[in-house]
Length: 409
Image (tube, rainbow, N blue to C red; front, side, top):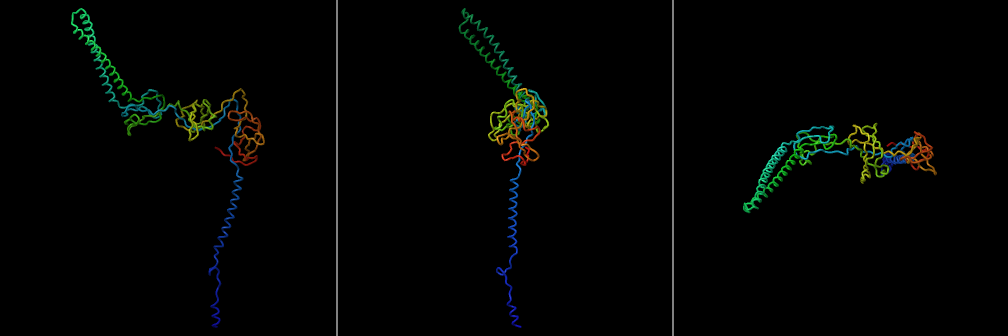
């Protein structure tokens, strides 16, 4: 019995790996990584196939008829309505604003009084200058009376000295008095002129307290109120430089930036169509007024000014606008409608001109016969019909029947 117990005590269970059981977690991690790698590979293959087969994005235009006297947009640019005559109206004098006769939106005529500054000190200076002028005028009258008496005495003594009835000394004294009288008159006349200048200066100072409209226009903003101090050039931190800001609405023009690469498409006097963002359903006729002869280096654009030909009261300064620059009407009397499309839609394949027409979501190749240029477009004699949609700048790899995705600008 003791032998059996001793033998049982020697029995042991064999264990793997330093006496520890195998970890099932390690085996599961290796399998998971293999599965993830397979899924990623499948996803990459699917993504590559999707990217390769993704349809190209294209821009389209609609085929339309035009006539010889019809203009076509050759370029579209954006800009803002800007008043070419605009002024911040200020005073040349310094003083407190005591009267303001206008408000925003008021129309004023050239020379009309807009505001007044306090002018009591200026008025007093004008009164003093006028009084000094009166004193100078009285002094001139006195000098002229003295001149008359000295002249008569001089002439009388001159005849007496010739007959030796007076001494030479008496004659010389009369002569000296005569010359002094002439000098006194000249001095008095100069004093009167100086007094007149002082009066004029004082009158100008008084006028400077009256702020007038520099031209016919409309008040846009009010910059100062009654009681505030107005100073020229805003010389004091608490002083206002301008009383109102006004603009001549008849001088409103659209200032648009045109890329220098498109500068050859526009010229002075060219007809335009203006659409304001505030009134998208209204169209205004315009014409290129000026092309500023300098290029903005940072933006590579040229500032172009377009004047309104039929502006109405709804057009306001700083409104955003889009300008369509139109082609010049074609010469001749041919009024038959012709099909014309942008030149970028026509490509050459296999020695012939073709156009890609949109049918559903696919591009279909159509051979066409191109004709004469029509403004910024090209005439199509055959191969297209009005109302069809065509692809602009078709990609080089585009083939008939390929799927496309249309984008809008």
